[in-house]
Length: 414
Image 1: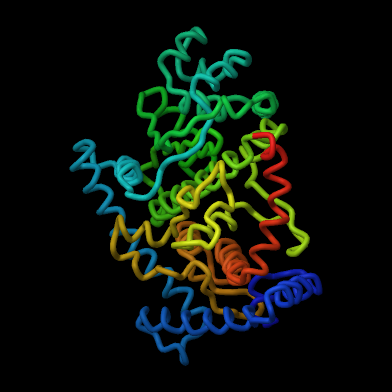
Image 2 (image 1 turned 120 degrees about the vertical axis):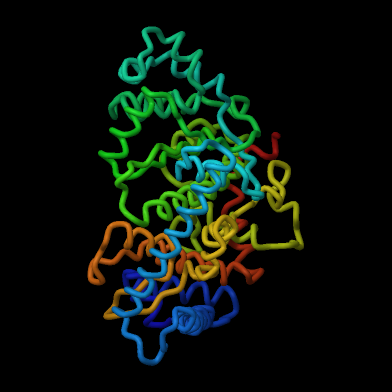
């Protein structure tokens, strides 16, 4: 195992080393840990060259500031592109968030999901009226609220205005849901625009410093307006996180479809609505995030056993789209960030991240070199390492056999 992986991931030892040894043994000792460390180092050098720097004469601090300049330039271009989209396709105001919503809705990527029916959500809301949300948006009766607002905006307003107690009670109702309460439909990209909503949105964005709300169980992303004085980099952060949430919705969707015959389906809905789906694996000695399995099968153009998840899922359901590639489909200058999500350069046991989300967050928040964020890089690197081991049939089959009893408890009866 390499020092680069251990320190970049800030992994607890000796457990990380022991986990890698198990994976190496199960896959026939391919030295995947050494291979990926070498590939990251080589690819990072190429990225440094693309920035116009000398890989042999660039300090980590200089690299960090070069990445900050690059993301700032790309963010400015993205702003112009999205405002042009908004002015051309939405309204003459050329609002950047309207441009984001239009861009997300027009993506050619798969946007189908398995989500809670709107009528079912409204039935749950009737049992627990969100009185603060109704008052904030100017509704005097629950019937009027349910009639004039969509299921997505109803849940959004309630989530923003009601307290933790109300949210907990709603989630408890999820435990009684059944697969018949779900349907296949397009992911909703919603932008509330009424005057009352503008007031609520401004208050929310000012307090929480972000404009994105995602409901995985409802298959919906809500984009709130950004203030005119939002810091540079906000557009890239907002759109990148929206693309991240699209992937999370897809992964949650396939997980719930796979588990639809389980007797505890409602409890799973409750769990995954606030946390990412996970499954246990003795081989990895820690929970496996379902989005890792999704990413693995999304990479396959063919598979020797395409019935691995049937009858509830096919490989076509396992869609996963890298954020930086989708960004470049909207604004071509982001092509620089292709295949960089798991790249980094280690400096005194802490990496400098090439991940676009880390870079945009660092830029938006004007973080110094010493306070730089690396979380998205670390997750991407860890997942990339595990994906390399899953490529070996022995590891894949072991993990799948471990997962099947969890998601297929009732499949024999189905």
